[in-house]
Each structure stands twice: as structure tokens, then as C-alpha cells.
Amino acid sequence: MGRRNWAIMLGAAAFIGAFPWLVMPFKAVSHYVDVMVFAGIFSLVCIGLSLLMGYAGQISLAQAAFFGIGAYTSGILTSKLGVNPWIAMCAGTAVCAAVAWLVGVPALRLKGHYLAMATLGFGVIVNIIFAEEVNWTGGPSGMADIPYLRFFGRKITSELAWYYLVWGIVFLVLIFCFHVIHSRVGRALRAIHEDERAAESVGVPTASFKVKVFMLSAVLASIAGSLYTHYVTCLNPSSFNLMWSIRFMLMVMVGGMQSLWGALVGTVLMTFVGNEWLQVFAELEILAYGAILLVVALFLPGGIVSLGSLRRKKHASALEGAGT
Amino acid sequence: MGGKPSMLLPLIEKIMLTVKSIHTYYGNIHALKGVSLHVRRGEIVTLVGANGAGKSTLVNTICGMEKPARGQIEFNGEPIEGLMPENIVGKGIALVPEGRQIFSAMTVEANLLMGGFVHRNNREQVRADMDRFFGRFPILKDRRHQLAGTLSGGEQQMLAISRALMSRPQLLVLDEPSMGLAPLMVKLILSIIRELKDEGRTILLIEQNARAALKIADRGYVLETGKVVLQGEGQELLEHREVKRAYLGKGAKQIWEA
Image (tube, rainbow over all chains, first blue to last red; front, side, top):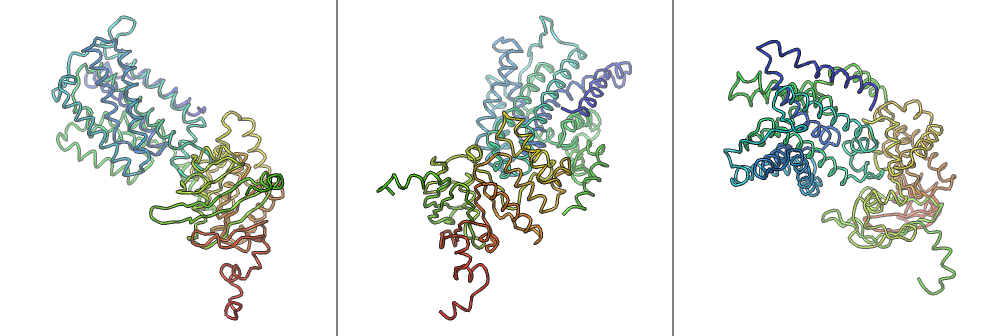
């Protein structure tokens, strides 16, 4: 996965590892550990979305739905049927993979706006199911008293334990995804993004690759959903509505779509923005989101991570000008 | 067909690609109205015709990107008309798409590696092939780590051809390789195609530049509004008065006289 990425990975891991010890002594910011747990959970969704959107070039407004399917599968199986949370998590990923396959096979034939509309419609339907299936999901008021995760028989309750559990999973997923990207499959995904017909002409099974990356993104969202369920121990359909799908997309775009690091940076930043810094705007929050999206789209289309490589980009575009 | 199979057999064996009365629709447009052609092993066959004659539709149909409504396509005696594009590449047909369609935001090297996509279990072969193309086109080697979009038009075409050959095809289909290139580059690309022919490769060449295409081709087909209106040997077609009138801008007088 490249020396540069390993170096960044080590730096990021060191920072993440040290972060709680940096903020905990200070009362005003000690709850940042909690915020970072959420950031880590959302990162899993956004890493998947980055693969799907930034690499394979397919838009999905259904990520919150997959996040929700994972969450509700875990919630229902553990609290109503007494299933082991880890097994429930696996069940959630299986359900999500199956649903993503069912939705993806027809939907991924569509392109651009149509794919966005199809996934949006799917997301809305799933959310309605969460709100209406009162017997299973508790309806609009949701479900509570979901058991904690257990690790070798011990309940995971402390924020710190959650923090390291979630971020440990994030880094494992990152390593896995970097391997995917730097493999033949990753190259093929980028080729699909660039030019689907050309990708077909060199023998890439575009349809099946698109469905597979969609399934992978759904599975990651599902794992995130299961972790979320056990962390907050209560569920409510409004955590999985369209607004959340848009937020996930915004996180990826702010950080930088073409890079997994972008997804990570964007998620952490936007989680802090959403949970902490935008609270002053109250109902006007949505306007602030719009403004951020506008600024990023206009002035920083490559996202925050592109700031670092701006010089290289300039060099490349100069070459492009010299060519032809 | 039939009759004397013993005499026909050697002929049939040499035939690599057969297109039998193919009909393809683009929505409501009947783009191919029963086109038939064949390509023998080691031959370079060209398909000429004006804009909208159906040349690219035919290419897309052969390569599996469009599904024909009727008709058969056989490659080495096997029907391939229902297959997906990726399976057709696997069978040994590679396409250099119209307008080159290289992956411009990927490096030259990554483009070539994509060309070897179908040889998933043979990294050494893919690497060796890539080195061969770097030897053949040193300019690509110099720019191997550069983004393909930064190459000039002619270099991009070299890359597109190399990328297609990376799949080690039996039949190479070139869709308008000279389109949008400077005259000097057109010459270069045509000389590359001639070299490929001398190596014994089988090529189906689609061109608007009828003169150049017919000059290097063994045989040619003239396509007009979805039908083959003429066929014959390259030289013969080049001298055919209909072709001269319609595609080479010559001999209009003869028509007046007739």
C-alpha cells in the first residue's frame, strides 16, 4: 500500500492513540473522546462511501439506510432474541450485503442523477420501515435497553474502551481498503470511474465490480451501525434518515473524495462541526452545512486533503498544458 | 454452404470472425440492417463509411457493448453475440475505442496494466508485455509515471493501441484510430498499423479516412446507412468509381458522364 501511506498511517495511529490522554485532563474538552467515538463509527461508513463514490464513481444516498439496517439488525437480535452481539453484527453485515446486492443489481445500471435518485428512494423506504414496523423496531419512538458489547466476557462500557475498540476497527478497515485500492481491483474501479466503456473494452466486468463495491460499502456501513447501536444502546429512526445520508456524503466531500484519508479527515472534522461547533446555529444548522458544501465545491473540489498535494497538482496541470 | 465440405473446410478454418446478417437498434433507430462480413486469420480488413453509416455500432456489437436484435457473430467458430464485453475480451478480441478513451487520470503504466486486466494470474507475462511496449514506444517508457492525460494525441493513440495489445488478442479492432490527430500523427499511427500487420496480426480497421485505410488493407467493406454496399480487395475498392465519388472526392465527372 505504499511507503507514504504507511507513514501517514503510523502518524495517524499515534495521534489517535494519544488523543484521549491529551484531552481528558481538560474538563472543557474531555467529552471529545465521546465525540471521537462517533467520528470513528461514522468513519467506517465514510470509508465505504469513499470507495464507492471517490474511487468507483457511483453516487449513493442510501448509506444511512445500510447504517440503519446494521443498527436495527443488531438491536433487534440482541435485545429481543438474546443473540450474542458479535454474531448479531455478522448477521447485520450479511443482511446488508444481501440487500445491497438486491438493490445494486438493478440500480447500478443507472448513472449519475438516476443512481442518486434510486438510492435516495431506497433510503426513504427503509426509513419508513424503521418508523412503521412498531412491533420490531419500536416505531418512531425507537428501541432502548440494547445490551452492551462484551469482549471476552467483559462488558465494554467505558468511553475509553469504546474509543480504542472503534478506532482499532477503523484502522483495520483502512488497511484492508488500501490493499483493495492498490490492487488490480482498485485500478479497475478507478478505470470504471474514468470511463466505463473503456473499462469494458479492456475486459473489466463493470457491472459485477460496481455491485461488489456497493456491497462492500453497505457492509462497512452495517458494521458501523452495529457499533453505534451498542454504544448508544438506544435506536431511533431519525438517526438513519436522508439527512444522515447527505451528511455522510458531505463528510467524504469535505475531506476529499479521491482519498481514503480524505474520508477520515472529513468525517472527524464534520463530526466535530456537527456535534460541537454548529450547535450555536440550532435550526439553522442545515444552512451552515449548505454553506460548507458550497465553499468546498467551489474552492476546494479535491477536499481538505488536496491542500497538501496542491503543489504536486500544479506541477501536473502545468505538464498537461505543455502536452498535446 | 454444404455441398462439398471437404473443399470448404480449409477456407472456413482460416476464417476468424464471421458476422452474419446482424441487425442492431439504437432505441428506435435501425442502425445495422443485416450486415455480414468476415475476417480471415492474418488479414487486415477495413470498414469504411461516412458518419452515421453504422461503423461504430458494428464495432460495439462485435465487442458486446450493444446487443444485436438478430443475426450471429462467430469468433473461431464459436457464437459470441450474446456475451458480455469482458468475456469477449477473454475470447481474444481487443478494441482500441473511438477517441482513444485512455484512462487520463491514471499513469501510463497503470493504463497498460489495465490492458492486461484479463490475465489476472499472470503478472510476469503482463510485466514482460509492458516492457516490450516500452521498448517499442520509448516515449511511453519515458512518461510511464506521468498521467496519461498529459500525453499528446498521437502518444495517447500509441498508448491505446498498446493497452489493447496487452490482452494478447487474436483480433485487434481499431475504431477510427486517426480521428482528431495531426496529419503527421496519422501517418505514424498508420505505419504502426502496417507494422502490426507485418507481425501477422489480424486487424479489423474502422476508418473514415477511406483512402488511407484501403491502401493498407487486404480487403474492405463499404458501409452505408447500416448496410454493406460494396466489398472487395483494398486496391480494387480504392479504384472503384462509386468509392472514389463518395469517399475520395474524385471522379464526380464520371458520374455526370454516365
